[in-house]
Image (cartoon, rainbow, N blue to C red; front, top):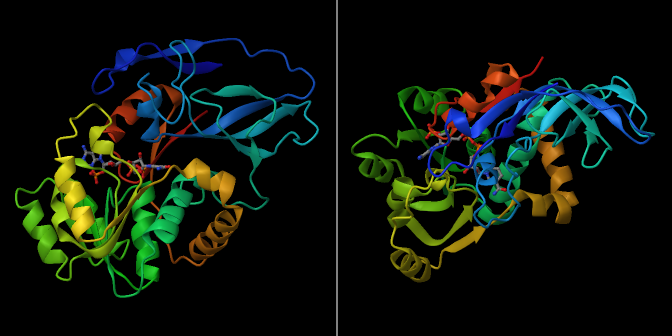
Length: 335
Ligand code: NDP
């Protein structure tokens, strides 16, 4: 069994020596356990947080432990009453090819699930994040302007498409011309602005002539600085992520200036962690599966995956995710 463990903690951007590829024996199965062979490993921004021991909403990965991650696997053999050989399951078994599981946190994929990797993206954690954050906190209404950054990514691409389905004017923000073109032509956004452009803030203002009613926050940094002055009275800001700061980039924006604008514009800012919604809002989860699942089947949603081959490529691909090198939901094909 090959696995990737955390070798050391990064202080800035992660580098190859923070990871170590190991070969270990697969332990024998006990009663109540099953052996899983990983097919698809999800790579997600939150993993940068787990590499650090700074206080957070979840405990860090210990040095020498397998990197955390969601994996779609096939059951190879089972001594667990609820799972049988051949079942496809999604579980947080981490960056490894095989895992022994007692079923904790493991969910069977429904029969006839067309694309198993979708359980890690559009129909999984990032998809539900987009849906819950936008619908429950953003509460977009037809005719309003919705802005989302990391617009072609796993979360952002769905946020914008749901907002379009709700009749909103949708403006994406993405890194580079190719991603911006895809946001407009493939995802159907009304506009998409390149955050690396020198006149980014002016372009954003021009694309939002009626201001911004919902800003779905994925990145922070210079993007947030450009968005904030454009927020309308009673704007809503679901704070989902701040990826521009995950490698330790300073939180440069003056927080009191931000709070002043929150006050004068009566803006509602709310952070959220999607795990709470899994626990507390089964109703919303069911609505997400139903609505997004149907759109996907009907071909009304565009979903792009960025697939890398082989476990050994995971560190490099993950480091690229934190620099915008991925184009679409990043997954690793194991085998
Ligand atoms: P993506 O697939 O969108 O990939 C990350 C993207 O972030 C990159 O492709 C890049 O896009 C952008 N990015 C990276 N670095 C920077 C930077 N310095 N400045 C601006 N943009 C940058 O990832 P996800 O869709 O999985 O995640 C999007 C956000 O949602 C993240 O912040 C993540 O932490 C958050 N999240 C939060 C959850 C919660 O429970 N609150 C759950 C899931 C995700 P580009 O090249 O276009 O700039």
